[in-house]
Image (cartoon, rainbow, N blue to C red; front, side, top):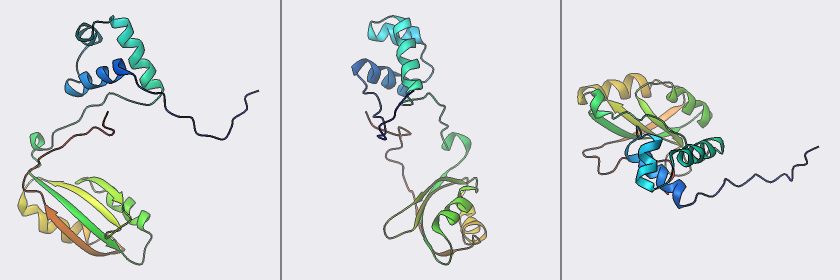
Amino acid sequence: MQIRSGRTPLPPSLDSLDTSIIEILRINGRATNQDIAERLSVTAATVSARLQKMEEARVMRVVAVTDFAAHGYNVIIALGVKVQGRDVSDVGQALARLPQILSVNVMNGEHDIELLVALREFSEVQRFLFDHIAGVDGIAHITSGIAVDIVKFEFNVVPL
């Protein structure tokens, strides 16, 4: 019989070898275990075991990330949304179904929801705002900002 204390287990701590493996994969997600092992002066079996341990503990996973500009998305818009007359989470779920929306965040602040949107051409902005966003039930107000340059974009969920 296993007795649980009711506490959420803490994620395993990462040592310098774990963080070095992750950093190499952040730079080159196609690096082989042998490539990583050679760079870190360990065996490929050690790298494999560490990767498996981290994936099983859910402290990291290897995924592919696409570059929106490489796929023809040349306009990035940040939107602040005020919701009225409908549950904020329901509005967020409705917005999340739109394929142009990269991120939906329920907020505590000036806006109820913040969105990150990618469009191919500037000419699409007005139609997207009026036909898609404003058409979602519960949206009372939209504040928009268009990115003129991307200074930093990292997909890293947690900085190490």
